[in-house]
Image (cartoon, rainbow, N blue to C red; front, side, top):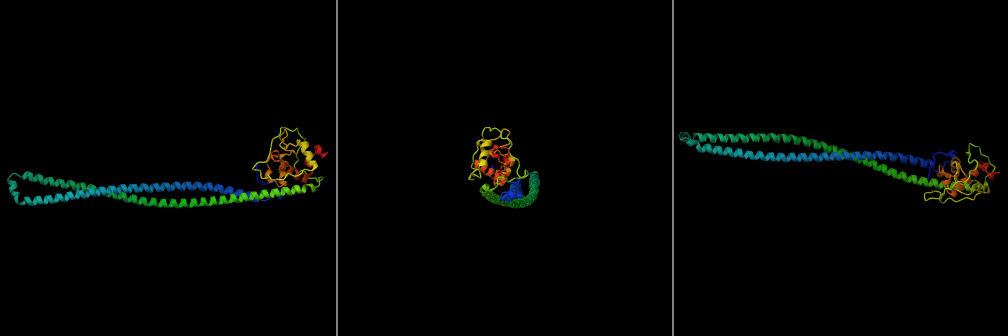
Length: 341
């Protein structure tokens, strides 16, 4: 269990090395992570808008293509009708020229009705074709107007598509920069935590080395070290503990206990490092309270043990914290224990 320290009972002087750096990097990493989430949402929104703009441009293109086909069909029909009118005009001219010399003959020979019918038929045919051509021209003009409007809209849609693509590029670039920053912060944080753990291990070793030289008669005010165990309770069922692969202090050396601490281990827990008192307030071989354990662990340079239940710590960790506490306050934390008499 890893706990990064932001404040310790002993004050800033006992703050683990590199704690400020680790905390700052954690804050930066959290801020970058939040910004990255927001930036990714913007990327998704920009990508969706770009897709919509592209679809609109494609739809405009299809509509323009369809109108172009209709215009071609109308133009072809107009040309066909124009040829019919031209042919009809030529035929009418030829017929009128051929019959001009025999008009009187036709009138007196009873062919008047036939000539009139032929003339009326030609006129009606030409008029009908002309009307059809006028209708086609009107339709053609409407299609051309619609085509021009679609082309203008397509031009605007293409401009929107280009703008959306540019926005997408910008937010994607920003997201990539934040991703790179997050990766860099993660690496720096890992290095800072490793440096912090190294410093804590060295501080623990130094505390253990100094322990035999500290006078056991030194007194410390209650405000400095919280009171720990009261009357020793009967040992309950042991809770097995042991180092895990995630334990940063797995290679911590187990210090030798002085006669007093060796007596405390037997008197308080019978040598059981996983024990917990019946009321749950005192834990481990030395029956630490949680508050005293936190303070002593910080003093020993084992800041990552702050907040960890004492009975869940390994034997070297519990012994190291006990030695550090004894170096600071002597037998005071265990007053009332038979070993202190």
